[in-house]
Figure 1 (cartoon, one colour):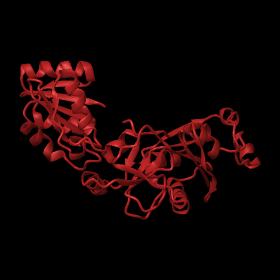
Figure 2 (tube, one colour):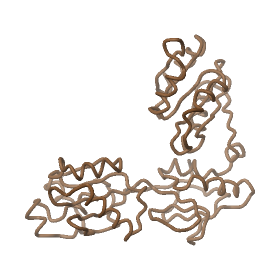
Figure 3 (cartoon, helix red, strand yellow):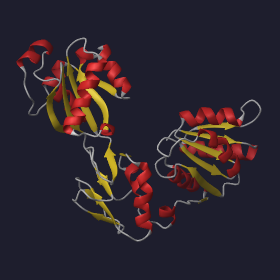
Figure 4 (cartoon, helix red, strand yellow):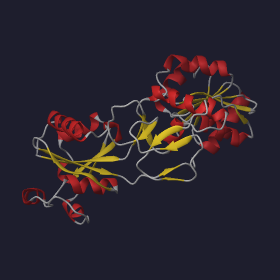
Length: 328
């Protein structure tokens, strides 16, 4: 977690520097040269966690104009300058503020003042668990309904197609039924569950030279509609190195905030596995298949969607190794 510490007194600055030495991060003494509104605006947009060594009220007023949503706001923690309490204020679960407060408390021998209900009672928090498992929470507005059941003593029904290591919490019952409270899935589902999407899919891409971004977007939309993949589960794209400077493909990846990983024909050819061969592709690129091989190579996993053809575009989808654990 990238951190920024703000202090208002010499004593507070000393404490902030102690924490930065152990947890990493920058330390700023707030004064006339470094006004709090300017510091907060910059750090709020750049860092994953903000720590105010000072009064809770100061921290609250500083971050209030910048708050947008629990899924995007950074963790915000206030620490008294005496180092007695670490208080998470914003993004306790999804942003990691509760975990940050505990880490700060461990460094200082302080008390983490955790006010989220599930944490306060030592119960299963579905959003915290999802974050530690590398999942995106698709409908954060549904978290409260799942947590409400937990707090009322009603076991939640969780569907997960992968095994989960460790001892299952008493508050959770595993199910294979579509109707459930929460579901770990790679697909778009039309139900009322809270969907937890592993960020684990790689889109393998093959395309003609000069293929436009619009053509790629249209093909991608068609793939999603036909195969029902959740777009939020994709983390990167992959292709052959002949596409390193392909403007349409680069723009397509940028639009989705994906890294484009590319590989030589030689490297792709050496990849073991059952791939869909094409003499034409081999003649043009030097390897019998681009999209499937690139997807597997980039993901380190296996194909869950073999070669799919669009207009001048081929896609394949590979799933990276995923591991789930109750011991979080």
